[in-house]
Amino acid sequence: MFTGIVEELGELVQRVETGGDSALITVRGPLVASDARHGDSIAVNGVCLTVVDVDGDVFTADVMGETLRRTALGALRPGDPVNLERAATLGSRLGGHLVQGHVDGVAEIVRREPAERWETVTFSLPAGLARYVVEKGSVTVDGVSLTVAGLGAQTFTVGLIPTTLAATTLGRKGVGAPVNLEVDVLAKYVERLLATGGRLPAEGLEVVA
Image 1 (tube, one colour):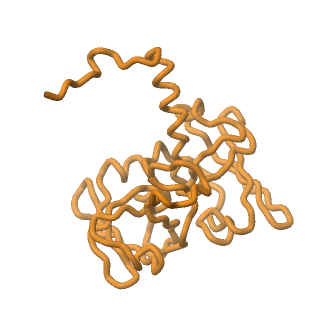
Image 2: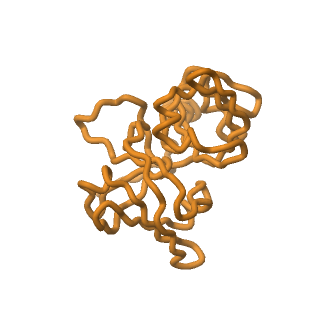
Image 3: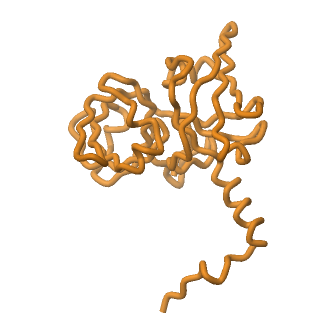
Protein backbone atom coordinates (compact mmCIF):
# COMPACT_ATOMS: atom_id res chain seq x y z
CA MET A 1 0.00 0.00 0.00
CA PHE A 2 1.19 3.53 -0.83
CA THR A 3 0.02 7.09 -0.22
CA GLY A 4 0.72 8.76 -3.57
CA ILE A 5 3.33 11.09 -2.06
CA VAL A 6 6.39 10.70 -4.30
CA GLU A 7 9.59 10.37 -2.29
CA GLU A 8 12.11 10.69 -5.07
CA LEU A 9 12.48 11.39 -8.77
CA GLY A 10 14.55 8.46 -9.99
CA GLU A 11 15.83 7.34 -13.38
CA LEU A 12 15.37 4.22 -15.47
CA VAL A 13 18.87 2.84 -15.95
CA GLN A 14 18.18 -0.23 -18.02
CA ARG A 15 15.36 -2.27 -19.46
CA VAL A 16 16.02 -5.83 -20.57
CA GLU A 17 13.40 -7.92 -22.33
CA THR A 18 13.33 -11.34 -20.65
CA GLY A 19 10.94 -12.90 -23.12
CA GLY A 20 8.00 -11.94 -25.26
CA ASP A 21 5.88 -11.24 -22.23
CA SER A 22 8.13 -9.77 -19.54
CA ALA A 23 11.00 -7.39 -18.82
CA LEU A 24 13.59 -6.66 -16.16
CA ILE A 25 14.11 -3.01 -15.26
CA THR A 26 16.86 -1.35 -13.26
CA VAL A 27 16.08 1.97 -11.59
CA ARG A 28 18.37 4.48 -9.88
CA GLY A 29 16.91 5.94 -6.70
CA PRO A 30 19.39 6.59 -3.88
CA LEU A 31 16.70 7.28 -1.29
CA VAL A 32 14.36 4.36 -1.93
CA ALA A 33 17.25 1.96 -2.57
CA SER A 34 19.01 2.93 0.68
CA ASP A 35 16.97 0.50 2.79
CA ALA A 36 15.45 -1.69 0.08
CA ARG A 37 15.64 -5.45 0.44
CA HIS A 38 14.77 -8.37 -1.81
CA GLY A 39 10.97 -8.72 -1.82
CA ASP A 40 10.21 -5.12 -0.87
CA SER A 41 7.57 -3.16 -2.78
CA ILE A 42 8.41 0.11 -4.54
CA ALA A 43 5.99 2.09 -6.69
CA VAL A 44 7.52 3.14 -10.02
CA ASN A 45 5.31 5.72 -11.74
CA GLY A 46 2.49 4.37 -9.63
CA VAL A 47 3.08 0.70 -10.43
CA CYS A 48 3.81 -1.55 -7.46
CA LEU A 49 6.91 -3.58 -8.28
CA THR A 50 8.80 -6.16 -6.22
CA VAL A 51 12.52 -5.62 -5.67
CA VAL A 52 14.59 -8.61 -6.80
CA ASP A 53 18.06 -7.09 -6.38
CA VAL A 54 19.74 -4.00 -4.91
CA ASP A 55 23.17 -2.71 -5.84
CA GLY A 56 24.16 0.57 -4.24
CA ASP A 57 21.73 3.25 -5.35
CA VAL A 58 19.94 1.10 -7.93
CA PHE A 59 17.34 -1.64 -7.65
CA THR A 60 16.02 -4.18 -10.12
CA ALA A 61 12.45 -5.43 -10.54
CA ASP A 62 10.60 -7.84 -12.80
CA VAL A 63 7.76 -6.46 -14.94
CA MET A 64 5.27 -9.06 -16.10
CA GLY A 65 3.29 -9.02 -19.34
CA GLU A 66 0.06 -7.96 -17.63
CA THR A 67 1.85 -4.91 -16.22
CA LEU A 68 3.36 -4.02 -19.59
CA ARG A 69 -0.06 -4.26 -21.24
CA ARG A 70 -1.99 -2.25 -18.66
CA THR A 71 0.51 0.49 -17.81
CA ALA A 72 2.84 2.98 -19.48
CA LEU A 73 5.98 1.26 -18.14
CA GLY A 74 6.49 -0.37 -21.52
CA ALA A 75 7.07 3.06 -23.07
CA LEU A 76 9.95 3.92 -20.72
CA ARG A 77 13.47 4.14 -22.07
CA PRO A 78 16.86 4.35 -20.29
CA GLY A 79 17.36 7.86 -18.94
CA ASP A 80 13.65 8.53 -18.44
CA PRO A 81 12.72 9.98 -15.02
CA VAL A 82 10.35 7.96 -12.83
CA ASN A 83 8.38 8.71 -9.68
CA LEU A 84 9.40 6.51 -6.76
CA GLU A 85 7.68 5.72 -3.47
CA ARG A 86 8.40 3.02 -0.92
CA ALA A 87 5.51 1.07 0.57
CA ALA A 88 3.84 2.80 3.51
CA THR A 89 4.33 1.56 7.06
CA LEU A 90 1.66 1.51 9.76
CA GLY A 91 3.22 4.62 11.26
CA SER A 92 3.28 6.58 7.99
CA ARG A 93 1.47 9.89 7.63
CA LEU A 94 -1.30 9.57 5.05
CA GLY A 95 -0.51 12.76 3.18
CA GLY A 96 -2.23 11.62 0.00
CA HIS A 97 -4.79 8.80 -0.11
CA LEU A 98 -4.81 5.00 -0.09
CA VAL A 99 -2.99 3.87 -3.23
CA GLN A 100 -2.52 0.22 -4.14
CA GLY A 101 -0.07 0.57 -6.98
CA HIS A 102 -2.45 -1.44 -9.16
CA VAL A 103 -2.88 0.65 -12.29
CA ASP A 104 -6.38 0.70 -13.78
CA GLY A 105 -5.46 2.17 -17.16
CA VAL A 106 -3.35 4.54 -19.21
CA ALA A 107 -4.38 8.14 -19.85
CA GLU A 108 -2.73 10.96 -21.82
CA ILE A 109 -1.99 14.59 -21.12
CA VAL A 110 -4.49 16.57 -23.20
CA ARG A 111 -3.63 20.14 -22.23
CA ARG A 112 -1.29 22.17 -19.99
CA GLU A 113 -2.17 25.70 -18.89
CA PRO A 114 0.71 27.39 -17.05
CA ALA A 115 -0.03 30.07 -14.46
CA GLU A 116 2.40 32.21 -12.51
CA ARG A 117 3.60 29.46 -10.16
CA TRP A 118 1.37 26.47 -10.86
CA GLU A 119 -0.27 24.66 -13.77
CA THR A 120 -3.67 23.32 -14.66
CA VAL A 121 -3.27 19.99 -16.44
CA THR A 122 -6.02 18.09 -18.24
CA PHE A 123 -5.85 14.33 -18.81
CA SER A 124 -7.94 12.00 -20.92
CA LEU A 125 -10.29 9.76 -18.94
CA PRO A 126 -10.86 6.21 -20.21
CA ALA A 127 -14.58 5.51 -20.49
CA GLY A 128 -14.43 2.47 -18.23
CA LEU A 129 -12.95 4.51 -15.38
CA ALA A 130 -15.01 7.68 -15.63
CA ARG A 131 -17.60 6.54 -13.08
CA TYR A 132 -14.93 6.28 -10.37
CA VAL A 133 -13.63 9.85 -10.78
CA VAL A 134 -15.50 12.68 -9.06
CA GLU A 135 -14.82 16.38 -8.61
CA LYS A 136 -12.80 17.03 -5.43
CA GLY A 137 -12.10 13.29 -5.19
CA SER A 138 -8.71 11.60 -5.30
CA VAL A 139 -6.97 10.05 -8.29
CA THR A 140 -3.43 8.75 -8.77
CA VAL A 141 -1.51 9.85 -11.87
CA ASP A 142 1.93 8.28 -12.39
CA GLY A 143 1.93 7.48 -8.68
CA VAL A 144 1.08 11.03 -7.60
CA SER A 145 -1.97 11.53 -5.38
CA LEU A 146 -3.99 14.40 -6.87
CA THR A 147 -7.33 16.09 -6.26
CA VAL A 148 -9.71 16.30 -9.21
CA ALA A 149 -10.41 19.98 -9.87
CA GLY A 150 -12.77 19.55 -12.80
CA LEU A 151 -14.47 16.93 -14.96
CA GLY A 152 -15.33 16.88 -18.64
CA ALA A 153 -17.14 14.26 -20.71
CA GLN A 154 -13.90 12.38 -21.38
CA THR A 155 -11.34 14.33 -19.36
CA PHE A 156 -10.42 15.41 -15.85
CA THR A 157 -8.35 18.36 -14.68
CA VAL A 158 -5.96 18.84 -11.75
CA GLY A 159 -3.89 21.70 -10.42
CA LEU A 160 -0.17 21.08 -9.94
CA ILE A 161 1.64 23.10 -7.29
CA PRO A 162 5.33 24.08 -7.68
CA THR A 163 6.51 21.16 -5.52
CA THR A 164 4.70 18.61 -7.69
CA LEU A 165 6.00 20.23 -10.87
CA ALA A 166 9.59 20.17 -9.59
CA ALA A 167 9.66 16.82 -7.80
CA THR A 168 7.70 14.50 -10.12
CA THR A 169 7.53 13.48 -13.76
CA LEU A 170 4.32 15.50 -14.17
CA GLY A 171 6.38 18.67 -14.39
CA ARG A 172 8.29 17.29 -17.36
CA LYS A 173 5.77 15.46 -19.52
CA GLY A 174 4.25 17.19 -22.52
CA VAL A 175 0.90 16.97 -24.27
CA GLY A 176 0.29 13.47 -25.59
CA ALA A 177 2.53 11.77 -23.03
CA PRO A 178 1.06 8.61 -21.48
CA VAL A 179 0.49 8.39 -17.71
CA ASN A 180 -0.57 5.59 -15.39
CA LEU A 181 -3.98 6.06 -13.82
CA GLU A 182 -5.30 4.48 -10.63
CA VAL A 183 -8.76 5.43 -9.41
CA ASP A 184 -9.76 5.49 -5.75
CA VAL A 185 -10.20 1.87 -4.65
CA LEU A 186 -12.91 2.93 -2.18
CA ALA A 187 -15.15 3.87 -5.13
CA LYS A 188 -14.76 0.37 -6.58
CA TYR A 189 -15.65 -1.27 -3.27
CA VAL A 190 -18.74 0.91 -2.91
CA GLU A 191 -19.83 0.03 -6.45
CA ARG A 192 -19.38 -3.67 -5.73
CA LEU A 193 -21.36 -3.49 -2.48
CA LEU A 194 -24.21 -1.59 -4.11
CA ALA A 195 -24.35 -4.04 -7.00
CA THR A 196 -24.68 -7.01 -4.64
CA GLY A 197 -26.91 -5.36 -2.07
CA GLY A 198 -24.07 -5.63 0.42
CA ARG A 199 -23.90 -9.42 0.03
CA LEU A 200 -21.51 -11.64 -1.89
CA PRO A 201 -23.23 -13.94 -4.37
CA ALA A 202 -23.32 -17.56 -3.13
CA GLU A 203 -21.06 -18.74 -5.94
CA GLY A 204 -18.44 -16.22 -4.83
CA LEU A 205 -18.10 -17.77 -1.38
CA GLU A 206 -15.35 -20.21 -0.57
CA VAL A 207 -15.51 -22.43 2.49
CA VAL A 208 -12.18 -23.32 4.05
CA ALA A 209 -12.19 -26.46 6.19
